[in-house]
Image (cartoon, rainbow, N blue to C red; front, side):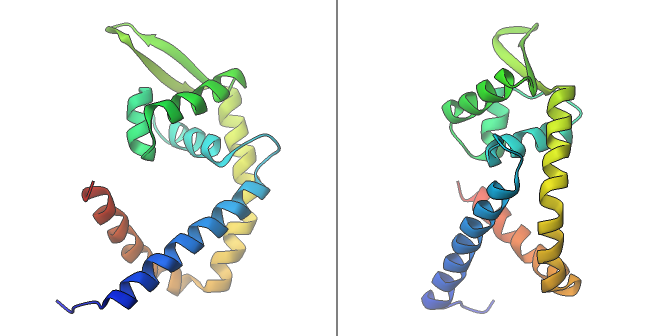
Length: 147
């Protein structure tokens, strides 16, 4: 295996952090009024998942504290975007699912951000996007497993 020098590793991390910050800023501006990126992320996850999730499962999925996830879920529930119900098998737990209004809000958000994301990917080029995805996926998996 080829050794990576410290300067190269730091450059990689710097590019990832900067790209993350810029992408989050652009996505936040493109989302429908009142929707935060964390709201979209949770709605998108729940819309793509057939099963209900506990707040703790969602917190682990998004690598945030249970308190941060509870805050996001409270806002989504107040907006009518998620249903939160007691777990009938374990009264200490709650289960969360996306509501029809939440699915519609997620779909609206996807419509708002898709042109920006598609334009960015097209500018980079499909071949480069395909080439970088496995590398980014491996990096994400390594970062997840190092916790």
